Amino acid sequence: MKDQVIFFDTTLRDGEQSPGASMNTAEKLRLATQLEKLGVDVLEAGFPAASPGDLEAVKIIAQKIRGLQVAGLARASKQDIDQAWEAVKEAAHPRIHTFIATSDIHLEHKLKMNREEVIRETVNAVKHAKAYTENVEFSAEDASRSDKDYLCRVLEAAIEAGATTVNIPDTVGYALPNEFGELIRYIRQHTPNIHRAVLSVHCHNDLGLATANTLAGIQAGARQAEVTVNGIGERAGNTSLEEVVMTLYTHRDHMGLSTRINTQEIYPTSRLVSMISGIVVQPNKAVVGANAFAHEAGIHQDGVLKHTLTYEIMEPMTIGLDTNRLVLGKHSGRHAFRDKLVDLGYELGEEDVDHLFRKFKMLADKRKEVLDEDIEALVAEEILRVPDTYKLDYLNVVSGTGTVPTATIKLRIDENEAQSAGFGVGPIDATFNTIAKMTGTRSKLLRFSVSSISGGMDALGEVTVRLEEDGLVVLGKGADQDIFTASAKAYINGLNRLEYLKKNPSLHPDERRL
Ligand code: KIV
Ligand code: ZN
Image 1 (tube, rainbow, N blue to C red):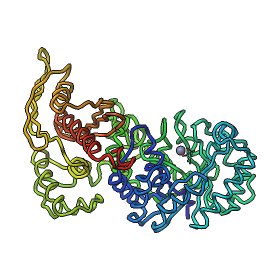
Image 2 (image 1 turned 180 degrees about the vertical axis):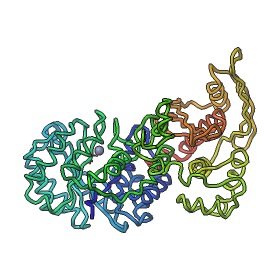
Image 3 (image 1 turned 30 degrees about the vertical axis):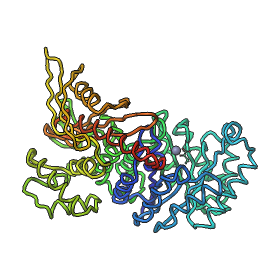
Image 4 (image 1 turned 135 degrees about the vertical axis):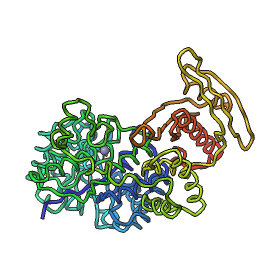
């Protein structure tokens, strides 16, 4: 049997630390369901001590997602570990993941502790976690910049205290692949009890080396890889799951390593993460970018038509692109639609299904085929939303050469009708200016992005906006075949989220980041 690499997904924790990628509990649960389908072994669901909202979200995931290990992150302190346990204790397979920094830079400037104190804290933390569960992971933060021999002493103490996984983060994305691989080899040779724990790697992408470093670590003997989908994460992000999985898959004969990942779920998972986090995948992103399988040069197209292997090292089908993506059409009935929702992980009430089915029929009337991603977008827009203060009734945009871009809009504001028109430097500017005038919003537009949900000329356009008002930051999303309508919907969705938070000031911090 092949040696197996354990996949530890931290999209919901380190990934959520991406600037602006916060997700609400319903979105986290939806993503956790998909990650289970993808076949990750361990899901780091959050950092329970960070906020009551984080704790609650981890708890709900632990209760509902039964087919994998659910981990909660904790600093090396009793309070953090108690909260992590409170969050994961009902999981089918709970894990506590505790960490402390081991580099002199962090010891001196951040922790203000000496090396012996850090070893003591490590042992206390692991023992405290161990009293709750057998499954304890210890991470030596900033390991790649730590003194190697000291790092080995810390790991030895952590394993002695009961850690079953020890993780080596390249926290600031500083390492070079050969050095990082060397570090893993060194740890294996100089930590006497290392065979009693799974050795794990966790890399950041500040220099674009996260995948290379992770693979170097695996080749040197690490057997857990900590990753995020699409590589989202703190600063330049984390190692991307799809890149490591597909490298191991593509080179399986030579590397001889297996995983539990169902590669056909990679593309749908990437789409979902992009939709929920609002972080658009760059078109040239390895494996899941829109251009990853697009051949532009004539000579390449000719070659691929003759034989795909001429210019393709992976088949699109392997990552779930173009296979089983045609889901439903205009003749599909409510029963098939409902089954599809369940298949996608949505267990919704009859009223929600009825509502979505009506919207689906309208979409199917306009399009030949409705894909999974389109249904995901409908659910995100119609169901995972807060109560509406503003609703778009009518939009007419005039734009073109020699014309002042103008938008005429009818809104329902708290059930009253309002109508107005406005100008802008472009059609979307005109649309947003008019909506802003009608709603009187003081919010600032921090980000606007538009992407196509599914391929083809009749694809749905998906717009994400990020709005800020008095320190509250929200995402707004909208999808439509017409990108002006999608933009208006996204802006209005963001404004509704702001209104909701303003009317519910008691919501705890996590939910204030809707
Ligand atoms: O990058 C890092 O060091 C981390 C640890 C908490 C594992 O995310
Ligand atoms: Zn990290």
